Length: 104
Image: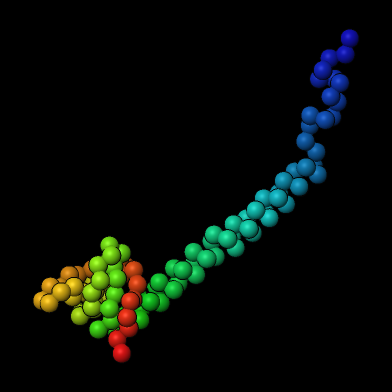
């Protein structure tokens, strides 16, 4: 009588070629993830950083919470935004989501 384990022979064991194939597949997946996820995110972060560095007084901005206003004062980390007549709110510079209108 022949057991099932003996009948399989070497079929159940991984060979060195299969390990190399697996590593190659993982490298290809990493390259795909890099170009589809990592690289675009880094580009978007760089654009946001450049936008924050180019903020000036009088720019109309949108905050991360959706508040629209005009930049009236700035320090290194704080941006003061006027959202209505005589209503000024201070935001962290990183919470400015975008510039809706640059000062002319």
